[in-house]
Amino acid sequence: MSTTVTNPIAPVASSPPTVTTNYVPLILLCLGHFFIDLYSSALGAFQPLLVAKHGMSLAQAGILGGALVFSASLAQPLYGYLSDRYRSKLFSCLAPAVAGVFICALGVAPGYSYLLLAVLLGGIGIASFHPQGSAWATLGIESNRQRWFAVFISSGTLGYALGPTFFSFFLPRIGMENSLWLAAPGILITLFLMMRLVPPSFVGVAKSTFDWDELWQVRRTLFLLYMLVFIRSIVQVTYAQMLPLYLTKERGFSYLEATTTLSLYLAAGALGGFIGGSLADRWGGRRVIILSMSLCIVPLSVFFLTSGWISIASLTLAGLLLLFTIPVNVVMAQQLAPNQSGVISALMMGFAWGLAGLIFIPLTGWIGDHYSLGAAMALLAAFPAIGTVLAWMLPKDN
Image (cartoon, rainbow, N blue to C red; front, side, top):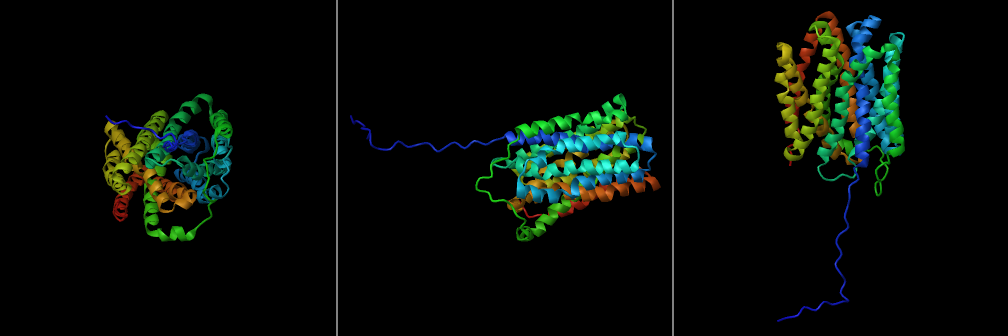
């Protein structure tokens, strides 16, 4: 029988240190994203009431929607650059209060010029949050990053979906003259984020400066991803602003029925974003984008060709499929230029969204004044077909 003798001098093997992932910033930024996008979609609920109150044309309503998208989106690359450079949490923390106060001021605005000013100022809060929130949400999270980013995106999309129902429930009850009270949640969230949000650790990470060379090296793929976001946003943001007007004016829906339908469409998109992010971790982003663009064309068309529950179900399915790509495009672009995450997030989530809305919301309203709003919106269903072609041109997933 042998005896094992332990050498007391021999060093004891130590287990590797456990690395823990901090999810608190993600949770807090998801909360902020929910309320930011709740106010982002409020204009869709305000629009029918504002048209009745101020006697606006559909083109004027479209310009109002385009102005919000312009302010909330086209300035995002600038905020992305400033966020990458200074890393102050004020970009994220102050945003819900700024957006809430000025968007809710729409109800008390005395004229059209004041409406334009309110949406432009409210858009500043929306614009300042998204680049930093997108860049910080999954910073330090290594595994299943697209899935966790989908959680962040879906939190905003859920707020965006509930916004029309939230405002259409309260506005008729409290009156447009008391609409500023609805800014209270945004103000409270700002105070909470100021107290609780600690910026993620940037140990070993140099402050970002704009690097054109890094972007230029991946310009082809980056351009394709940008165009795919732009095409998706044409449908997404135009429907979000004009759907209640279309349903009430041309389909005979009540105000509450129209805004509830919009919330259902947007809520399906929130679910679609989460599903798309999860599928991208398994199948790759390119496959998910191809599926999203190609499969949403039929239900978008069926929505306009049918009525009743079939039409609403088709719209809901279209929203689910169309928004598969929200987290996928952003993460794919961030991986192309990881040192420019704030700028990349702004380009993919803000600038593309804003340019699409700035052009196509007023254009859809103008066509609606001259022909019909239904015809104008139905034409937009052709854009995902173009997106399908562009998606096939993306580099194949490894």
